[in-house]
Image 1 (cartoon, rainbow, N blue to C red):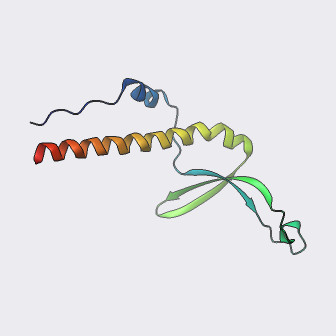
Image 2: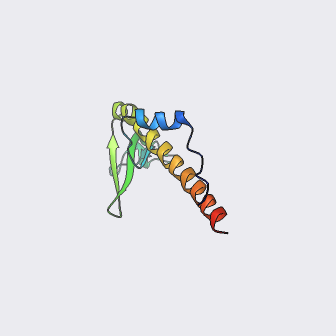
Image 3: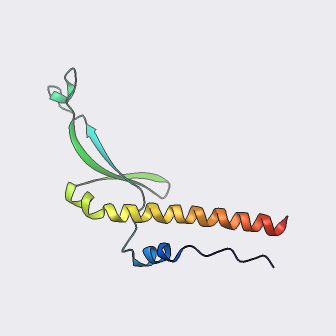
Length: 106
């Protein structure tokens, strides 16, 4: 029987347990052009509209983007951070598990 790999540090586990929510996807600040022909965003050099906060994620294999208000972006930023940290911890766990498997089976 292989040795049991070490558990993640307790503070990381506590961080995950204490987290409210985790939103998948990314939050990006973007500047945009509009559809008006005589707008400043069509000038040379262009002066684009924005910044707009866009939340992009994948749902059922399709990319979905939603525009958030600055207040929403500020409110939900910790949730995006939680999801990112969760993905990082999962990647670390998978790497440790693969290392333990290869050590036990070689």
